[in-house]
Amino acid sequence: MENVEEMQTLIKAACSGSVQSVKQALEFGIDVDALSSDHWTALMAASEKGHTDVVELLLANKANVDTQRPNGDTALCIACYYGQVGAARALLASGAAIEMADDQGFTALMAASEKGYADVVELLLANNANVDTQLPDGTTALYIACEHGQVGAARALLASGAAIEMADDQGFTALMSASEKGYADVVELLLANNANVDTQLPDGTTALYIACEHGRVGAARALLASGAAIEMADDQGFTALMAASEKGYADVVELLLA
Image (cartoon, rainbow, N blue to C red; front, side, top):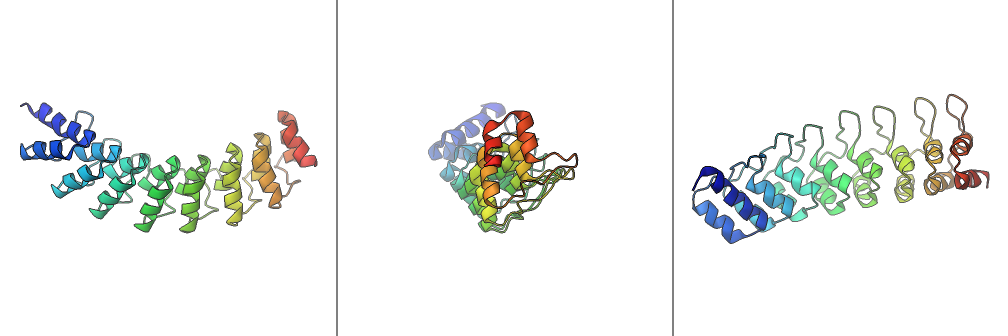
């Protein structure tokens, strides 16, 4: 059997979830860390699919837990991105590097937060993942969860002490991001956790202004209910009412005037 075929046999077996097929491939002498042409290992394949028993078998056979793809992804990052909590638990139990990031700076915690896998987020935090690691642009796992409307993940991060006011390099906070996207449930969660409702960007805009400018009536309502300063203007003197009026968001205009 050619080496390429051997490799594919192991990786396909891992992908299928067949413990017996993986055992046979390993007994045949196929390298447990063999890489496919796209730099995929059997451990990565099993982690992606959530085949925890195969993950455990490969690790018991000394698979390298922290092998990285060309983009920096590890089996742990892959498991977390796909919400495979059992596989992630097995990898962590074998010492997977929890802070190892891809070439964009994305950690396993950020991947799980973006996708909204609150159980994976909780597992990573219980294993001492750094809750406030920042991407090069300053965004954190909390910001990412809020930007994608992942209220469960955001709740788990806040429960572990995520810095609620940590902003990206433009000054955007998690509250501003959720307000811009119109995730009213996330806005309410952040405000319930004492996010500053009137934080301003360098140009003076607030979360309320941003919500109104984008026609996000639910987010705007939540901000107003928490006492957002309705007359706070940007550095051009533009108020939230002016922004909503200019864009033609009649429902937001009515809310502001109510």
